[in-house]
Length: 225
Image (cartoon, rainbow, N blue to C red; front, side, top):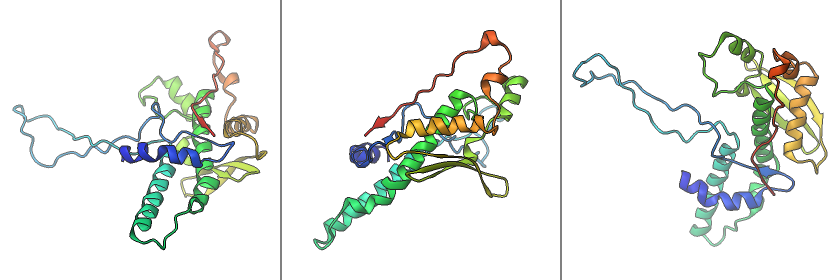
């Protein structure tokens, strides 16, 4: 799968529409935890008291644009196979319009909201250890959980929605955007709107000591078309 992603990535990037950017599988993106099944057969360890688990490498990533790249791979490969089978099939980039008009920019904004939200302190970092200090756990409990968030995307409007325990979606914030506005700017505005509308506490106010305050760096990797 990694080989297919690397092979088709240049074509995928070329189909991304300006002023959108893309970064479907950055090197620093945390992966979804691997499935580690516990064996049901007795262990062969001489002491006979330890339980072994087997780790399986995962192709999943918390980066949501990765799934869009994989969807593009499936459609592109199927299109190539049909072209090889018959001369009557005429491949066209228009077949991927839904991906690059909606799915790609929407997932890219979601990934940028996660990056900027973690840097700003309004979205919980899934890589933080669960056994951290009580004060850190309390601060994390006030942050939004990225897995419950999604972005509604259109060329002129963006919103962040959250899914509750009953799988109902609620709109948290909504902003207007210009068609020429970059996705990075849109994502930053969404994060600022979460703070401005009181959805999450302002991290600059809730930090305990002024002497420990540091300016939040807001930057993220991108491949801009």
